[in-house]
Amino acid sequence: MARPRTFDEADVVARARRAFAETGFAGTSLDTLLEATGLARQSLYNAFGGKKELFMRAFLADTAEAVDAVEAVRHGSDSPITRIRAQLVHVAVQHGGAQAAPSLFTKAAVELAGQDDAVATTVAAAFEAMRTHYAACIADAQTAGEVDAGADPGALGAFFVAVIEGMSTLGGSGATRATLLEIGLASMAAIPVTPLGHEHLGAGDGDWT
Amino acid sequence: MARPRTFDEADVVARARRAFAETGFAGTSLDTLLEATGLARQSLYNAFGGKKELFMRAFLADTAEAVDAVEAVRHGSDSPITRIRAQLVHVAVQHGGAQAAPSLFTKAAVELAGQDDAVATTVAAAFEAMRTHYAACIADAQTAGEVDAGADPGALGAFFVAVIEGMSTLGGSGATRATLLEIGLASMAAIPVTPLGHEHLGAGDGDWT
DNA sequence: GGAGTTGTTGACTGGTCGGTCCCGAACGTA
DNA sequence: TACGTTCGGGACCGACCAGTCAACAACTCC
Picture 1 (cartoon, rainbow over the protein chains, first blue to last red):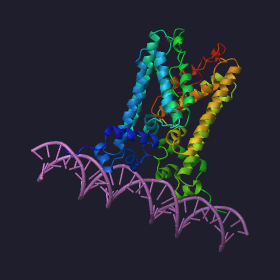
Picture 2 (cartoon, chains in turn yellow, red, brown, blue):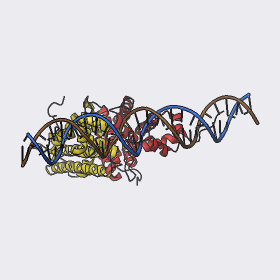
Picture 3 (cartoon, rainbow over the protein chains, first blue to last red):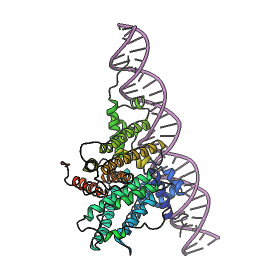
Picture 4 (tube, chains in turn purple, green, blue, red):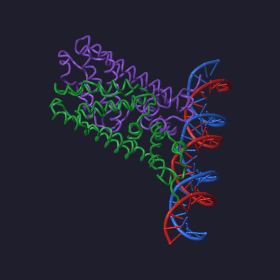
């Protein structure tokens, strides 16, 4: 009963994510956004409501993806310790390298968490969710006898959240993939593994070149 | 032979640092800057050259301070391991708490490293300097027999840089001082200390309330 | 005390910001 | 095929942006 849209809403959000991730919220003008997404001024306004609303769509999508990436640490057939290492390697591969795209989540957290309440609460909730995922994984490793029972899963969870945020910042500032891998692997040593757990700390997995 | 300035240049830079740290470069208008520094439009222009130049002044000052804070880890009468812990506690105290002021260095790195070459090179140099300071401290600990000789000082250095950047990001996003302390202390466990070194990992130092 | 130099002040500029309005075009339904 | 509805493109809006200009004020040196 009406003219159909000539653009895919999800695709527009994905392009907006890239644009905002490059230049931030304040640094990305509406014109830049239109060029990046390919749609017309009024179309963006009709479909999303405005610059701020489109940013929140992109930001929430990126946040959900970032949390999901950490959530993967809770599932899998291999050892909890191995899953954490694999996840850290994944972060290093994603944020390291030539193109150097800092995540929109990190960028928005640094730029806007102190100014916008909606962003601040979303960021806080995401950090807390990530921390919980890591902590649950550590707790799993404890029940499996791979990690010292005296370790504090909550503290280690917060620690790993800080590590991946630091990796994101360094990666966005030009750090090489090799450096990020060094960081991720070095952080693994903060987990007090039992002799049993050491069996799972040996080999790396796959190629990340 | 001329009318003297009614403002202190260093003071203006300090105020500009606070303003830019709050809202970033693109998010801070010249009018906001004038209100924050208290000087008139043309005065800012005469003394500094413009918004970008004043930002660079503030950014370089903050960067130097951040690097110096890490450099402190190389000096002192107490054990190298103790110095690192003290420095991490210092970072936690500085970036944690109610006022939640993210460092301008971190903010500029995330916002502009991908767009401005001058910022990118400064950030990269600062990260490298910090990494070198941490690495030298770890090497000291190795020669003192407090840290396992097989440890990689360079990798641990990069690791600690990532940790303090992560703490800065989390702190700027509302994380409590207690959480940041948890993170900093948890990261210490990534250092493979010898039985001798364990003597220096015991008590905390001072009150940071 | 006069001249010269510098800082301060406020009005002003062209350009860009995000957002709105309007009209022709494209499509589904009747 | 005629109608109603939505889309897309361009013109347009007031507000704000960083930066400039010219007149005035304060100070030092001669």
